[in-house]
Amino acid sequence: MSTESTPLADPSAQDVGIAAAVAARASVGVNFKGVQRHFGDVAALAGLDLEIHPGELIALLGPSGCGKTTALRILGGFDHPDAGQVIVGDRDLTKVPANKRDMGMVFQAYSLFPNMNVRDNVAFGLRMRKQDKTVRGKRADELLALVGLSQTADRYPFQLSGGQQQRVAIARALAIEPTVLLLDEPLSALDAQVRHQLRAEIRSLQLRLGITTLFVTHDQSEALSIADRVGVMHAGRLEQLDTPENIYRHPATAFVAEFVGAMNRLPGRVGDGDEVQVLGQRLKLRNRNERPAGTAVIAMLRPEAIAAVPDSAGSGEVVERTFLGASVRMSVKLDDGQLVLVEEPSHADAASIGQRVGLRILAESTTVADAGE
Ligand SMILES: Nc1ncnc2c1ncn2[C@@H]1O[C@H](COP(=O)(O)OP(=O)(O)OP(=O)(O)O)[C@@H](O)[C@H]1O
Ligand SMILES: [Mg+2]
Image 1 (cartoon, protein in one colour):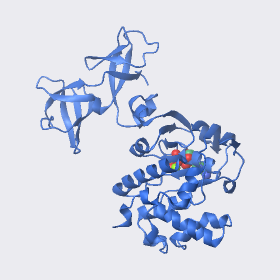
Image 2: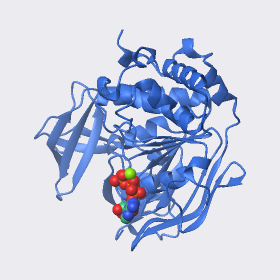
Image 3: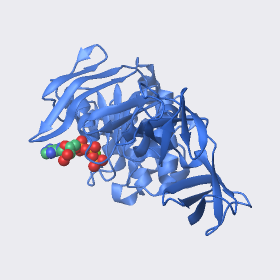
Image 4: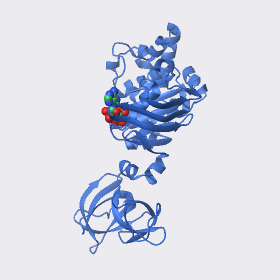
């Protein structure tokens, strides 16, 4: 059996001492309070407020440059805020250096020490903490068992696959029995299959250890699938912090709606009650606010909330069609020129390219933005 397919959370490793030691620690909460960090004119963090519950895995998601890594580095103590506080458990760590915080850190790939074998890599943090050599070796071997890599202890990083190297990096981060685990795009250098597998393994190990975790990614499906709650960041601030389902189904702002998943912006008009007319259909309006009846708005609808029904008298034409296996994604051009993205489960009578279709909205409700937004 290849070590690539050995799950991290191997039940036979359940009684491994180090896992028990980490799991026995009470989980701590983390609180960023108004954290600011400027680099010259750039506000990498513009007042970040973020509370992570004990034992929770939060994924920070957002476009390049929005401040994710800066937030993580500040929590790890590798960088310090200009203003605001970082509280971990009941301690204010704002000014405490990295080596005095019990945090395990995993970076993008290739962060192992190339001149040390796997066991010494895992034991590195313990050596820095002046642990006895036999204790270090024993701990390292326990951790390698935990991540399913016992066979590789004497190898060097260049003799491991990318997925194996990241497992070693996780073992190294856990070796110091951290109170918080920090991961910065740990899977982004891996190919899709290994990435999906290791994602599931990290989550199951994290749940088993109950370790409070901050996981940074710009991959939305990774964030939605791994986290208890997802924090969507934009320009140094949190736009929304919520469960993956709420982030996807009830985005709080237009930015979140468009950043997470594909989104159609369709013209609509507010009706008398809490309703809006879109594509000739009436939907419940989630955020009417103070908008009077007749206000022109933009309705946000996911591609899977719309069906394209073949109809020679329909109001659009399929101009693009991608077969994705379980689903079919289509671009439908309406007679007024508007393009609408539709994603349907694949079935035999799905519309084909060039075909006339009518659009039917499957969602019962929608969020709207003001027409100028
Ligand atoms: N040491 C630094 N010196 C100057 N500017 C910096 C420094 N570190 C970060 N920045 C700037 O701060 C902003 C936030 O950077 P950060 O690395 O936190 O972004 P990120 O969300 O992690 O992006 P990515 O997804 O590309 O990794 C960026 O504009 C970046 O250029
Ligand atoms: Mg980054």
